[in-house]
Amino acid sequence: MTRRIGIIGAGLGGLSAAIHLRLAGHEVTIHEANPEVGGRASRIVDQGFQFDTGPSLLNYPWVFEELFQAAGRRFGDYVDLIPVDPSVEFRWPDGEYFRLSSDMRALLAESERVDPGSRPGMTAFFADAAAKYRLSFDKLVTRNEDNPLRWIAALKPSEMWRTGIWRSLDQELRRFFPSRRIREAFGSYGMYLGGSPYELPGVFSILPYGELAYGLWLPKGGIYGLVQGIERLALELGVVIRTSSKVRCIAHTGGRVTGIELASGKILPYQVVVSNVDVPTTDRDLARQPFKAPKMTPGVLTFYWGVRGKVENIGHHTIFLPQDYKAAFDDLCTAKRIPEGLPFYVAVPSESDPNLAPAGDSAVFVLVPTPLISDLPGMDWSRTVQELRAKVLDRIGLDPSRIVVEHAWTPVEWRDRFGLFDGSAFGAAHTLPQIGPLRARNYSRKIAGLYYVGAGTTPGTGMPMVVLGGKMTAERIAARER
Ligand SMILES: Cc1cc2nc3c(=O)[nH]c(=O)nc-3n(C[C@H](O)[C@H](O)[C@H](O)COP(=O)(O)OP(=O)(O)OC[C@H]3O[C@@H](n4cnc5c(N)ncnc54)[C@H](O)[C@@H]3O)c2cc1C
Image (cartoon, rainbow, N blue to C red; front, side, top):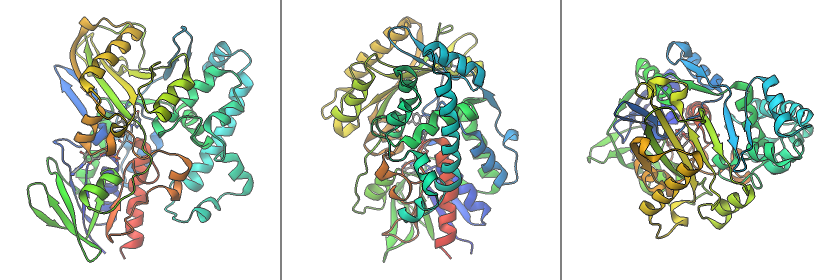
């Protein structure tokens, strides 16, 4: 039966849900608070430079291909992907580096250079992670299953053991890489999932694997090129998108959703409401319900620098690791302070798409992880921004006088622009008690007709995951709103 569905937020999860719901025949309107769609994946355009605000690494392109296929379209007709290979370089303060490539021969030669004797370990890691990746995506990740036992029962005991879900990511990596460099590089992906590699489940070794096996890509026009392609598809299918249309609250009576109220005071009736806003923000601020805050991923301080000329010695993606890696994770995840030995990530997407900067210049993005806003009471952000800026510039060897355009977003900015709970950049963490059926469900258990989509709910964070999540939310609605 056709429903009138209102979606709050045009992040990638909201757009994906809108597409799937429209394909199911519903009337769908998205209300987005900001003037443009994209959410965390927005853009800043300033003096000929274009910066993606959040995501910079596009992996699992098959997920986006499937989204377009569902609508009978070809992804390539909407988005042009440029391969980025070598993909990511990890650097340590002592000058050592480790450069990833999806070319297996190049990767094996590089791991042998960084860690002599590691070639068999890398080959075994690949075989093991490939099996985990297949099990995860075929049997676990995209299933709307509320019962943890039924969820995990999809795996045979040998498969269950194989996922490494009971070991930490670091323990999992130790099985293949006895020396620290490769382990530190692959374990550092844990930061985006909201925990240290010593805490996150070992199944997440599929992250570095997925990136290597399916490659890293940059859409032409930056990540925003992907957002625009998906927005175009949604509009073509008849999704109505209202930007600068902030929602004040979700209206509900007798335990059933009735619609939404805009910040302008206008009340709009909807039979079903899907919130793409962080789950705890939705429950606390929009549905005005008692809620339990989950463990969140860290915050981020992000810099957007328009730089005159080329940035020497830095490729498209570089991750700067500290000498004492464990101490940095302990600082960030346990002591809740900005690590002294600062880990950070730098992207220069204009290396792959020169149109993102004026001719000969560079668009530079820097991401520094921070604790959450509530963990830093009394924080003087303007001073901290200057201190961290100086540290980053010093380590990458960039003369600040070459920066001609500059923006910096603290966790407070991230919270206020997109409703990110406590300034958490990636949503709820992916610790064992917060994955699969244990993660916030994509429907409200208190208000019938209220659904969720995006990084805070299932399956999890990252562009591919929230796009898969859009389909899962549409499937939930099909199953529950008969
Ligand atoms: C700095 C950073 C770097 C990242 N890097 C990567 C990466 O390299 N690769 C990757 O795959 N992922 C990356 N991610 C994660 C990825 O960006 C997110 O998981 C994904 O984009 C989140 O999508 P979402 O569907 O949860 O929606 P969001 O992006 O959270 O969008 C929610 C939308 O709701 C809107 N909204 C909020 N409140 C209201 C309201 N009251 N009324 C109306 N609208 C409202 C917001 O404005 C926003 O547009 C990164 C994230 C960050 C922050």
